[in-house]
Image (cartoon, rainbow, N blue to C red):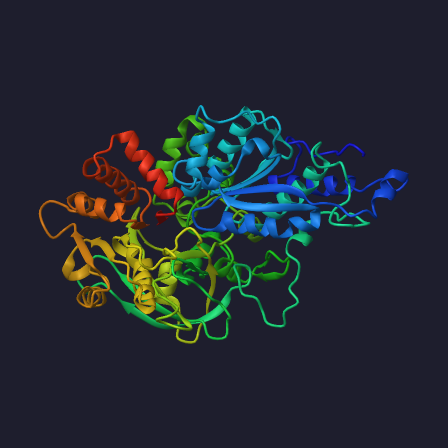
Length: 603
């Protein structure tokens, strides 16, 4: 077998280019030598597939989908893959595993997702075994706008190496526009695995293959032969908005909407707990302001991702992120401006100052504040990130609303630095979708946020604000199925008079018995603010009783504050009502997660 060359990390390529080139070289050099009789002789013999373990850590479902896509194609490369979320590690004997792929997103301040946290804790415990027999590589997902970009993937990568495992291919780090990097890493991983000491005993790829497959990105998404279009993230369905109804009262400080979207003709199916991906367009007014600041009329030609020429205005409306300032854009802008103050903010020791400066500012603020900075149309477009879909928890049951999806969305509107701001997708839905204009959508499956299969099991749902969305769907589903399990909802917002979302529906469900309990927390209806976590503590004995009778707990909403506060409140319930120590409470909570009885949809 010829040695496999590779592109070093200091070569003048970006991460995606380097990963693709490494994959190409590895695939090229993994061909058996046709001049070697032994290679030709074994090419006709049947081959047993090589076992491969794929672990994923996923909060929104993207890493899970990538891991399952990878497993689906493993056979053509000669591997038999098992796919598990990382918290299922207790059913795996790592001492018996020799090949591992990890696909993980990052959550919070560089932390693993919920379904990977227990495995991370295990790897850092005294129980973690040495792993010199294990070959691995990591695909990390993240967002460059956060300081701990791909933090979880980096941690897993480094910890496995510390335990003696062999990194057979460099870690790939994906930004929000992850597809290209993920495909390149996957291609390179297959080749590297085949060429590792553990995988190259038989150089053929696939069962009985006489010619090895060169792994290239084109192999990873084989064209479908179906005559009907397959709608997904890369090919969203042009749905029709049926209903746009305001849920909050006129005098509320919030603007929360109920949307009903028709799926007829799409063949899209969903389950309660899934999310709907919406592909928005940018605000035309903001696009006009940016064009004016740049001195362009919008008709200038630029290239899109398919290398087709389109107008600059069209590219800004639908193809690129034009609000949030990415770190890469800020670095380019600071260098182009020549401003010493902006350049100084780029130094690592001033990271906190940079974050403070960027908070509440958008690209238009930089352009207006430094009018001397010039870009060509192509330069400006290439400096922007791709406009990403937004994911919204589905607030309807397909059994109650066939052919339709409901969403519960707060339209984001605020002021900062003397300028009015608008959420890209929320105001796209609320303000800019006309009756006949399409809403591009796709289904984002969420296997980690599901009702119990046993309909007799009780459920506790905690969802303040728009976090109530999936629980409206849960309740509709349980009612449609005639599930006998008790349902308990904790809901809260600012004021009952103006912000009690779906009040009539929830009160009707309480009367007809669908809801066994409805606990409310309206923070501004009394001098002292009250939140759902306080209601949880007040109901500690009853919650403990439900938990001990097998209840499943679900949390949906804000990750930074609410979800953390609710988690702390639940631990207190276990300690006080369950008479447990802090360590025992933590173990009890971990057991709930392992049994999939504590699931969160937080953002």
